[in-house]
Structure formats: structure tokens, C-alpha cells
Length: 180
Image 1 (cartoon, rainbow, N blue to C red):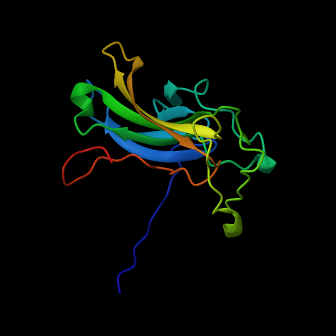
Image 2 (image 1 turned 60 degrees about the horizontal axis):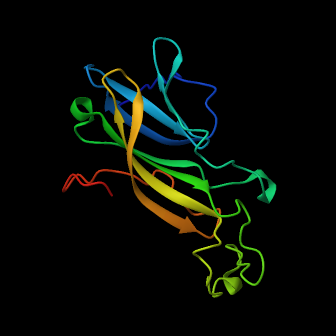
């Protein structure tokens, strides 16, 4: 039997609610960096002895923890760097924006409880006008000046519940290189 010693050392601290960890090489650089997405809408990376902000979309992400005792499964949930990110600067985000009436937007006859299977057979008949939030998937680009910019929205999906929205939900397929 071989004894193996492992020494772990923290590389970052004081980051609240991390949802995604990804690595990528920034355009114009050669070293791979660790990127940390937070539920509230920040994408951070360890820089020169400090935490740097890559992107801050807190204003676009819906306000979290406003009901249900502060528990929430919405927010910035997905980050994927294009396989050629170091050359083209493309990356993708999945996050939650406010619904028609914000958290708890489904009062009245449609009051399913995601934790009570007996209520989940109710029909969501007014999904066009009443929903808790929208999950959005967007394509962004890191401009040559180092500033990220949204290029386009790829998907908007209305969601009736605050939970089960897919943390770390964006990845590029190793088989075909497509965003899944």
C-alpha cells in the first residue's frame, strides 16, 4: 500500500451562493482560469491575489429569497464557455428573470405545491399570463476591450415554480460541440 499525502489550500474565500465552476482561457491569455458563477448574478475569478469580477448581471436576475423562508432555486444557474472562447470570446448564460407578478405569481385555482404530488395534476391553463419567473438563455461575447456584451437571447421559458430549475445547466457536448 502506498501512502499518499494531499495538501489542500484555499484559492478563494468569501464567495456566497456559488452555482457553477468552469474553467476557460481568456482571449489573449495562455493560462486557464477558474470562473465562479453565483446565484445572485456575479461571475468571478481569482486574479492577482484578489477576486476579480468578470460579469455582474445582478440587476437582470430576479430578486432571490423573497418568499418561502428565504429558500430559492432561481438565479444565475448556468455558464458555458464556447469551446473556442479564447479565440471568439463567446459564452452563454442561463438565469432567472421575474415573471408576470414575481415570486408567488400563481394564486387562485392553480396553487400546486412542488413538494405535494397530490397537487401536481392541476392544469396550468393561464401560462401565457401568469408564471413565477422566466428562465432565459443568452449568448454573450467578451469584446476586445475586455467588456462582456449580450449578443442575443436564445430561449425564454416560463416557469410555474421557484424550484428545480437546473443548476450548472449549460455545457458543450464533447461528442458534437453543441450547446446542451
